[in-house]
Length: 82
Image (cartoon, rainbow, N blue to C red; front, side):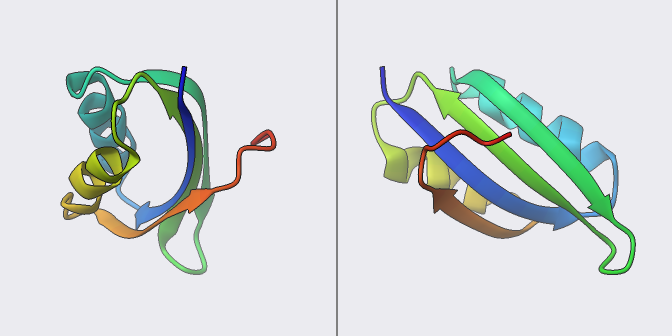
């Protein structure tokens, strides 16, 4: 099964975390890991997550990138997130 590790930067609003999880589940993804850290100096969450259950990496990245609360999104090499 394909796995995709992502690094996201979102707004500091806690609801952005819920929205990411909801967006992932609505798209039929299986969340393998999820870690979020609030950076109060930059007023943002820094998130590392790994998902599986997708046909196209571009499709998943594209859907997440459309979300208004995501400031930055980048794929990571899968070597273990935490």
